Length: 471
Ligand code: BYC
Picture 1 (cartoon, rainbow, N blue to C red):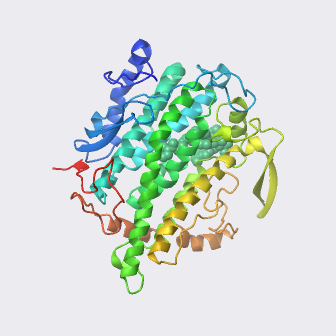
Picture 2: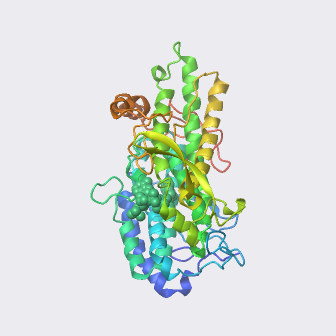
Picture 3: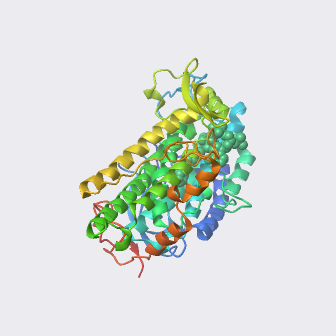
């Protein structure tokens, strides 16, 4: 197992102390990162003690250490999963070749772009969530928000390490720019669509961590297959942290659903809203929104970029080893296309459909989460069910971009779609209602009326624990 240097200014298991040039470059980036964190990180809580886990080793049970930490003092480190002996490229035209320890010249620009795109999402999500602490429904949830935030910060470090180590001056410039762009800023937006959408209430936060972080999981799984060994190793370790983020989202929505069902049962008209809860139709609208925004993050259904990433061995499929044929030539993928308003089925060369292959796995994983939420409704005796909308609904990227598909995947006229938009997506009034519920609850053990308590606390501690010290 690799040795972790925890005493260094930048904790790491990459032997940073032996590479003075790289160390200097990263130590020069550090104060800029901290300024960014202070400006764009969680507002109002930077001086508070938060019960956080910090990575201290990369093996299965040793990596997470829990303690009170003030967020700006969090030990953001650089951790790569341990190498796999004699690892070979597992797919594409370079199948079976040894993996690359340095960046091959011909793939330099493409790899830099992939790493920058991945890196850009990390600070973006922190920016999107920076005001949520002030409306936290419990200390438990507030702590989870901050845990997610500091780990997204660490994921930014992971990508910046790659940029500084392997991409010379342009890598350093890109690393600076990662701190310059701002989520939602029209002049310097973040790169991908969903990372510029506002996340200003906890329903959106839970949907974001359910659906958008889950895109993160699949993109990281695909990059973990990369022929560029340091990229594969860093993303493999990031996946261990990502799991908690999706837990926060999936159980967060589940707890809303559970509470709404309870409140419905307490009301003579089964009206959760009348009892100060989130009605199921509103949950469905937010689900529709974040599922669609997150589907876009997989890129176009038919993509020559995806085909060349696969061919070159830069980005594989999730769990590539589970496929039989790793070359994926002479195979096709059946895709629903739309030409002049006519929906048809078409065969596409498999390599060009790799974004869709990844999206398929993602959709299946999302469906599992929705089934779990519906189970809570069933148990509570509520007959309504939540569902994933058609993957053609409200898309901005790819084959169905800007097309007026309804949630069932039917193509409507633009006018009809606009008329019905408010049935499927949150309206301004919906947003105002959701925000009206979001008064902060900061006494240990207490929770907002619209949310059920979690089944258990963090790391064996009770829900009542003071996860954030506010006094
Ligand atoms: N918004 O061939 P196409 C996470 C661009 S989340 C805006 O269809 P490609 C996290 C695309 O860049 C995971 N632009 O797509 C979650 C291209 O531009 P150029 C983040 C978009 O290239 C929560 C053009 O459209 N990781 O970790 O196959 C919290 C045509 O591209 C979008 C990654 O994304 C969009 N949604 O795939 C915190 C992995 N989609 O080149 C963190 C790295 C596409 O023509 N990125 N475009 O100028 C990639 O693998 C690929 O860039 C994409 C796009 C999958 C995003």
